[in-house]
Structures are given as C-alpha cells and as structure tokens.
Length: 214
Ligand code: B16
Ligand code: MG
Image (cartoon, rainbow, N blue to C red; front, side, top):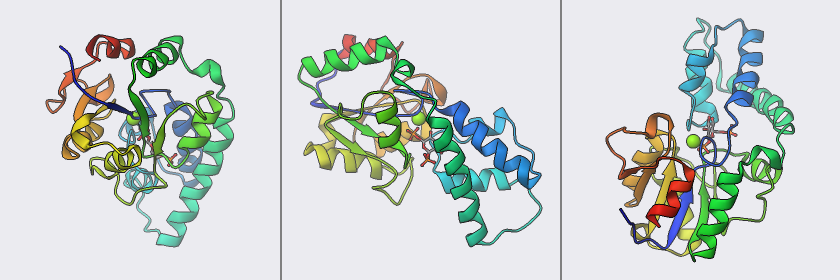
C-alpha cells in the first residue's frame, strides 16, 4: 500500500516519544495530596486528552466540588512537577528507529510537522534533540479545542501551507485518528487505542513502516 502525500503530521506523546510515566508521576503526586485514588488504568484514559480535561477525569473520584480557580491551581501545580520530571529526558529517549525514519522521510522530500495537544511540546522536543527538526509545530498553545476536534491538525496544515488532503497524520490515540479524519486527512494508527480502532486508514506495524508506504 502506498499513499501519495506531501506532508506528514506526527502526534508527539506515544508516537515520537513517551512521557506517560512522567504524566503519571505528576498526576499521582497531586492526587495523593488531595486524597484521591489514582492508578495506571485511570492514567491510560489521559492519553491525548488536554490538561484540564485530564484533571476532570481525576476529580471524578473526588466527592468534593472545586472552584475553577482551585482547578487551575491544581493543573498548574501538576504541570510544574511534570516539567521538573521532563528534565530527565535526553536525546537518548529518541530511538534510532524514529530518528532514522524521520531523516529518511525528509530526504524523500516530505514536509514534516508536529500536531500535539501538549503545551509542553517545544520543551519536550528540545529535551530529545529535535528542537529545530520539524518544519512546523502545532500544539496545545495554538488551539482551543482538543482532539478529536480537528483544530490542531488543521493548524499544522495551515502553518505548512498544505491542503489537508495532502497530509497524513500518525497517531497513537483513537481521538487523534478521529481528529485527523475530521480534518480531511489520512489517519495512520501506531499502537495505543488508535490501532484497529475502526476509523484508521492504515495500521503501521512500527514507526519505520512509514518508509514502506511513502
Ligand atoms: P500538557 P499528544 C497529550 O499529548 C498527551 O498525550 C496527554 O496525556 C496530555 O494530557 C496532553 O498532551 C496535554 O499535555 O499538560 O503537556 O499540555 O499525545 O497530543 O502529543
Ligand atoms: Mg499521543
């Protein structure tokens, strides 16, 4: 199977790198402080979900009602812990497979962008040595609506100056595949709940499989 595209937009967390355990540790510290039960299973529900929506999921287990101001303070506290933990990331957290595949796609002439819900995207890319690599970055600082809304991918296409139909998206979250499809793009699933979710155009066997379809 071959796809005729001009640009490829990558989700960050779960596709280019893995920050799950840092998100987990930071949310766990907050939940423990608030006396709210939180485990890895609940953490799995936070993939691809925005920071405030993630907090709402955690607060489902609380019988206390919090004001918007208190919620904002909680999200800020979690993010400060999370950013401290992200300092543990280095270029060694980028696999050779991902690095080499990205370089080869660029050599083949594809425009490459990031489409992530994270407001920490640029910081994470710097930590793993990809600070200057991508042609464009659309992230949580550019958008109002999170995936499955197509906003972040449409924003990436606009920054690239490409038509949505000429873009493919690589995603590990079902909500991300839905966002790609709603944007009029091709949705390529890689692991996570994106895989075989029923809305993907293709299931990637692994990251390097991109070199077989482009
Ligand atoms: P932040 P992605 C998403 O990134 C993560 O998967 C999700 O777990 C996180 O809550 C969200 O970013 C917001 O992150 O708190 O850093 O703004 O998968 O869209 O690259
Ligand atoms: Mg993801």
